[in-house]
Image (cartoon, rainbow, N blue to C red; front, side, top):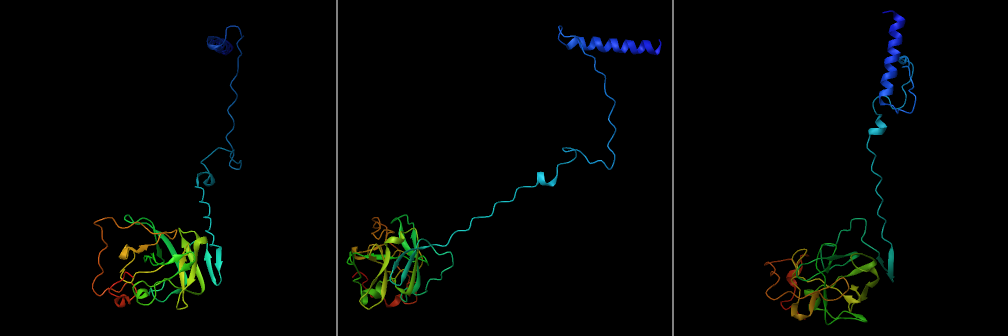
Amino acid sequence: MKRTSLASAAVAFAVLALTGCARTDVPPVIEFAAAPAASPSADTPPEAGDGPATQELTAEEPDPPATPIPEPTVAKKQKWVKIYSGQSRKDVTPPRSIRTGSKTVELNATENAEIGTYVTDGAGRTLYRFDKDSNKPPKATCNGDCAKAWPPLLIKSPGKIFPKGLNPKILGYVERADGTCQVTINGQPVYYFARDQKPGDILGQGVNGTWFAVSPAGGKTKPLADGIQPAPPEPGGTGGDGGGGDAPVNPGY
């Protein structure tokens, strides 16, 4: 067969192939394959989308910078004492002794399964209130030997109080009979118990029916359930400050 005849046969076959899958009412269109494109030269840049993904597309996005926690602001002032809106962002070292007082006081709301939420100092030591005191007006009545068993939480000038979980507006201090200043919660003077041994101890809970761990609102926490008694202090205990041994035998008052 001649070359021209072969070409004609190929065209006729292409027409038949197109009419086989096209609509019957539309005349077939014959398309000729374009010549293959020339391969790009070495100095021709590749088009977008060619080649492996770039590092910018595969790299993980960096985490956004953390928002810095603002310093607490002064929520209240009582003469030379500043009460802040929250806990200090700097480490505060509480005094080792519960009898000396400090210029900086931390108060924390702490949970307890038996008595509920109560207040501790920056070292986790339990703070108590005395039913014979008053909060309107604030007045501390535990003095002398009573204050040896129940040392008041003292604040010195110029003082700062940093609360966590307490309303700063209800915090302050009251002047005691000896001229020292005792921290108050909602006007209620607060104390330690000299026989508490370590953070979390509540050995003073319910003593004489008048001493209770103080709540964040200045009220009394729940009495211990019947049959639940705090563990007695170990012999020679320090009360957490090296001076618990001078607490009177009867801590009730």
